[in-house]
Length: 364
Image 1 (tube, rainbow, N blue to C red):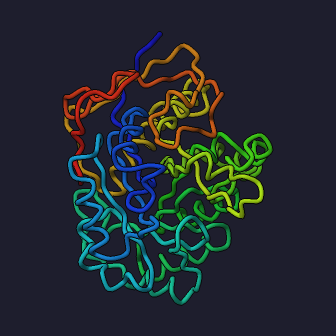
Image 2 (cartoon, rainbow, N blue to C red):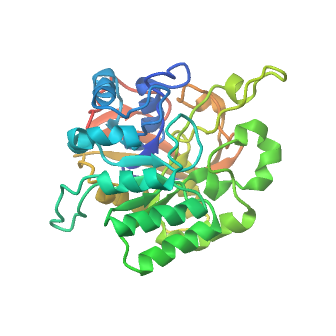
């Protein structure tokens, strides 16, 4: 047995479902899943059933989260033609602007090129580059395949920082590599489900494997691993839904929603990949702690760390998860890393089995 001491992980891509979907996750349960999974900072996405696309909606999230979070929590804002009028008001309170250029959960789809261009043109350039920090706040794009070409073109045209969410296809890897080689201010993320699952797993998972972007081919999965060095961030895209929602009764007329939970399991999967020689420990730490902080200018946490046990084998089981939805697409998978302790600002908040104490996370 060996204990690794790691910095608290940072997840810049989670869906905590509050407000509007608290039956499947909320700020309390989602941040408990985070600290049990070794995450001490997470950033919540705007595509709630009550979307974060106005100043008031953002303020409501801040108020709802106060005193209820077990890790530090921040927010992204939703980019739509109607939300442009609030950009200047909310700019200093969020970590990025999320633009949904392909269909996914929620009603924030922006698929007309003229609307996409208006959003990229309107996102402010208030911040100046200083002390090695990038200028401005990123536009995070849900942009799949050919749509990614539009996002890259708009970012270049309007000198915006572009962060590509959940890159999943070999062709997208090549687009991002090309843009980076051309000097575009672009970063990218990959999810654990696209790294550790592929379309061959869909038959086994059924509707529990339904997500956006969908699981790619083995070739796509291999391309992600072969180009791991150009990937900036691991984003869990933690997107919980109840089992009854993911697997509705036949004839109910309900369509299973997209998304899978990931906060409890991502660190274990990534450190298992290190143990298996698929990437270095330094690279895992870079993608899961260092680069997210740099790209999104996330505040540092003093005396904050995670202890991870390696050297044995554990099976991922739903009964051990803290997420409210209570299931995982990785259930039954063997891992060789397990979070044994999470410490936030000097206070132990998770002991490897249970959450300790009251919520001490900050709304940042």
